[in-house]
Amino acid sequence: MKERIIQLETLSALQDQSIASLNTEIFRQQQDATKLRQRIEQLEQKIADIQGPEEIAGSERPPHY
Image (cartoon, rainbow, N blue to C red):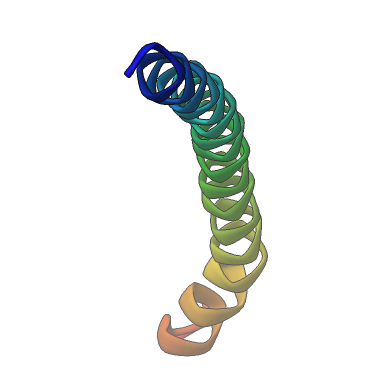
């Protein structure tokens, strides 16, 4: 019986360690995902800035009209 308790305690400790490791990895991945989202937003803004003046220039009438 005592051996069985030791085995269960060992298994529990290993599971706790695995859970902590997985939690750390999930936290790191969430940080990476947040950084990537921010970078995508920056790139989208740069693309919009680049495309913006061309679209306006194409749709406006020249000043001599």
